[in-house]
Length: 252
Image (cartoon, rainbow, N blue to C red):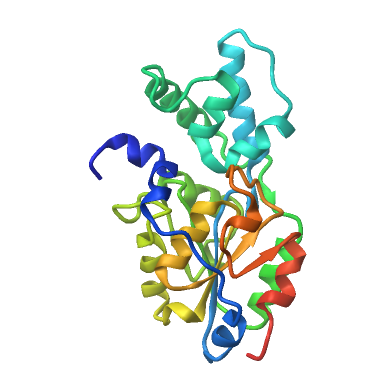
């Protein structure tokens, strides 16, 4: 990328990609493939990481002499990781000279205690169990760097259950660029239209659409995008985690 700040702030790249458009026949086209797979974004889609990420943000607030914020206030910003939480908790934007140092502090603290409160998003335990019962491969495509993704996956006992796991630095680009999803699809050895990607941010839908797979907006997630979920251009929307079950079920 031309600027390291673009790597730090992938939201700046969203405008570089044409907006997705929903495909009404997506399920028919997806079900036409005898072998199919489902990929999930991590933070706010598959896992509820808000308490652990928000706890780090509050630790930085305490260091700055500020009172802690309620996790419910920080929750919508957790999808954007350190960048979003530093902005919300400390009022420091990604282009502020202080940002890099604060980001390093944030990531160092998070790495030391990455999974204390993290758990599946409501309904996702059942969704994943249903996929596994149907012997349908599933995996993760996240903008969280591998140094955090893999320890978190290990801590929750998910590594052996994943068909593929792609982090924010696995490829030269992060979402909304389609490269991470293209990489995951290649690892699965499936056509793009045999794959559904579920995400709780507009950039997830942009990435999935341009990677050629079908997309489901996780309206139950952190949803930090200023754009309403209904305007993301996803092929389908799940209001609750459990709503994914009928969307992702079918002949196997």
